[in-house]
Image (cartoon, rainbow, N blue to C red):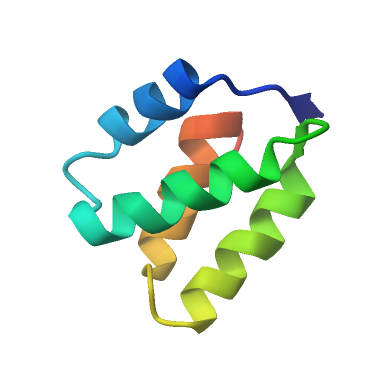
Length: 75
């Protein structure tokens, strides 16, 4: 399934996650979502990009899961 996210929708997702992500983490995720949305955002593509942020210790595994749930709602 492909998602088209506007700036407003990205901000809404980040707002939903305000209790999970700190300011720095929100910045990483916002940048990732803005870059990844060109041509649509696929769940597998998002999963890989979030896993990369996780491997770089920029977000936690729980954050990764929560972000995917907030966007695709089926994890």
